[in-house]
Image (cartoon, rainbow, N blue to C red; front, side, top):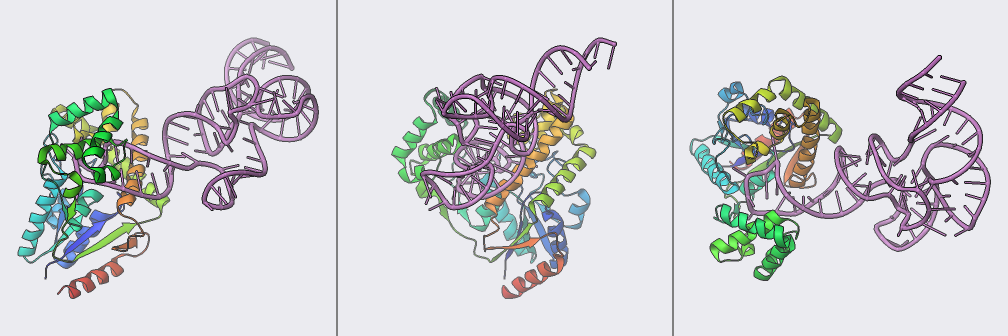
Length: 307
RNA sequence: GGAGGGGUGCCGGAGUGGACAAUCGGAGCAGACUGUAAAUCUGCCGCCUUAAGGCUGCGUAGGUUCAAAUCCUACCCCCUCCA
């Protein structure tokens, strides 16, 4: 019977490494669920698996678009589901790996994402309106159209207010009525990697230093040389933004490095808001201990149960 | 030895008699999330308490005052300049 394994957890905790080992042990293929590793030319700053690792185990959804191409959650989910089906077809085990909680849950919980592509003009118009009249005016507008949606969006979160209005404008329907779920038909095993917060921060800091040592500054320089502007969403990621500021002469390198570390800490904290330690759906393992045996036996049990 | 400047919460840094548990920023902690999400947004952040409230508190020790981070005295420490 088909199934899916997902390896989740905060950044730098060792998800990729575990996934590669699982893929080797259980005849699997890896499907990326990291919102930044989809970009070509962004390797060091996104901690993308190495060429060597990718030659050992098949990786999907890495290097699929250029940094200036449009992308979306809906697109990622769509691609991932197709890849999962394909991996099933070939009789192999799909292993979803990544730290982007939104992407992970959209697949694992089966969100039905409103098929409304971004309307740049519409967004700009509303952003202008918000500047003039304040975000509360737009929130009020949303509240009148869709009271349910308004209870689920913070009045100050302009971005989400505009998106809800955008969906209404495009479909004529209430955004809140489009938020449905249709969980996958196959069983999913969630493996969460975690560790003590201080230890995680130490790991993050070491990895940032490594990124610098292996040429992050050059990578960003080349991206800019290729014409990728720093205002692109892809270039707003942690690491790229700060090195960009350094290259513009706005901050010193040590300062940029420290900021990257701090922001990665914050990112890891936000990831735990998606992957709650008390979430009983997730099988948590502390990477400080010996995780190989217990995880393998968990996976074996899961695979046996699912046939 | 002399002259000046300064010591505030984890850090930086405001405040110069009452509205100060102390602006603000950073760090840290908790959370929301159906927009390229590594985005965007919310709350907490001296101690006790679910809260109301209470307690301790602005280098140290005294003092003035109804009231002190803010004024006075002494002491300790740091920085700059002169010797």
